[in-house]
Image (cartoon, rainbow, N blue to C red):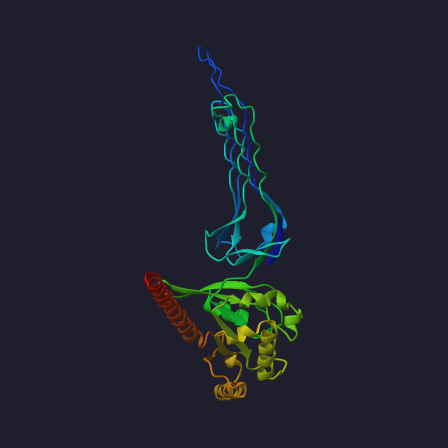
Length: 356
């Protein structure tokens, strides 16, 4: 399936049903009076989050989504049937914009989360509604209002706990294969990854996290070079960035120079991303003798002046990968506990303020 992370669609809510003019006519009941019922409300259009989808490709073939209109009211004060709402599934991580105004309508981040994007029309009123002491036989009714119509732009930013960052051929695809069930393409040439790949890493019982393999970046990516800015945005939602460096590149490029290229592109795209947690993963230690590999890794860490966590791995041989994923899981759980504590403290502070 082709990966698509941006598309435009049109959503049309159902019109409200018209009210009706009717009078009660039954044998032996003179002056029966008005009994025209209201119309039914039009159906609305909702977008619904789904963890079973990971691309917007379906929206390239179907562009327009229309909910059902409400039906007209009828005699005997019978209300018209409400139009059925339309629920459209989108991947978790979808941002929804109004194409005409640029307004962000909503951000769908959870499974089964619903977002109203087009409101159904309101029902028209039957003539029963207009009966009064001075108007015993009203002959007026109202039409239902039209349903909302909108042009939407959908933008997908993949939701993952961990994002892999690095130059093409740094070994990111091999690493995600080593630690998860994902099977991205792996080959001995650059740009084998052409779209983000997501993998679930099972660490222990009821312990797992999602890792994303982002296409490799090159110098000028923030301005659109290579696969460019198209995929840089997918790194913005991750909680940890793993900066993967090939310590023995086939083209003999200095690994420190490669690392600085990536950091420079991140800074140009969004300086705030440099403040996010980043861990260094020195890959392909199997290509050098142990002592030489350790010396190269020490040199890279020293010249980068790296202060954060660093790991020495061989993704192909799965050397060092277990320690890496256990530490990631520990960090994510600690972060989750910290956020819960902060939310609880904020809630208590809010309650105290209200009491005062």
